[in-house]
Image 1 (tube, one colour):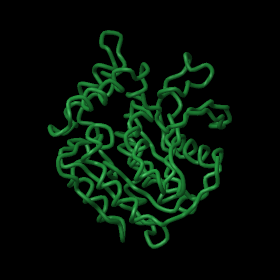
Image 2 (cartoon, rainbow, N blue to C red; image 1 turned 135 degrees about the vertical axis):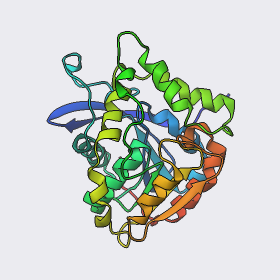
Image 3 (cartoon, rainbow, N blue to C red; image 1 turned 120 degrees about the horizontal axis):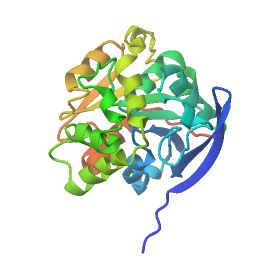
Length: 285
């Protein structure tokens, strides 16, 4: 029997003037690394890294469920509103969590939509962070699919979402982790994946902000899977080229959800990314 070192707690943050009870997990000690999950998923995507004693010996990993996701409930009255994530709300949420947990300039590591918002924060609020690891992140990716399929009365949104993302998982991913990753999307709340994809596929505001990012003050390192069809290596390279001083690594044998679908393959790339970030302690939450 093994009890994992991951500790789960709740914190109440105020977003758009409304209190939100938000779930977060922590593991490790030392430099704070705030980890953001992908669209339609939750903190479970980071569990392998949070259980890695070599990584957590010097890094305190913190992952939280965005409102509407995982163990973070939607706001009161959610049944009367449509969930559509916006850049502004996403930024406000991340900054509210940083403040509530007392994090002093953490490293920000985000994947997919989390990588996209990491770059937005690098452009707009770099002073709140010490560095950025943008995973499967690009400037803008218009939808090559109809996002309304993920919230219809005649289709199971979770299974539709899992079907879509299955094409973005590397063929080298172990079967057990492929299906664990897909299960998170199958469990997604009604309309949540669609609401996240609204942000991911319709907001192109980052494109004109990439030149604002100052990597001399806060380093930016992009990671992209060779088997990612949604954010291809070409997309990530185009984005990195637009950020003076940004670095990029293409991860062989990995797809769009590397920390979840193939943790062993992702591990050396993440360790290298952490080594590129400044060493910095954080206040305890």
